[in-house]
Image 1 (cartoon, rainbow, N blue to C red):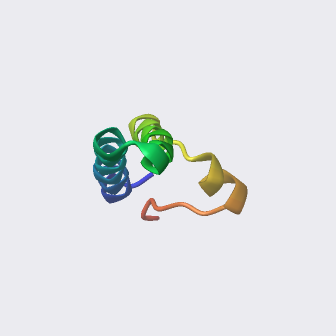
Image 2 (cartoon, one colour):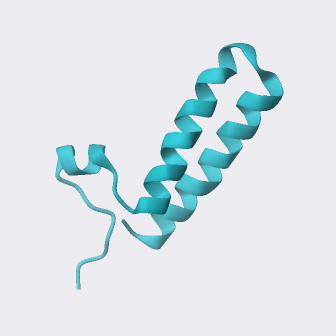
Length: 60
């Protein structure tokens, strides 16, 4: 996973977690999605990328 991909995942994940905590209700789902995005950014592994056979890393 490329650095830019990880950074976007962390920022989006934290935004969704914050939104879910502040708004509550239906936005509780956003907390779970945010946690998943943050974990995949930290580990550098995305199961959906593996299944789809894609990568955000630059080849070189």
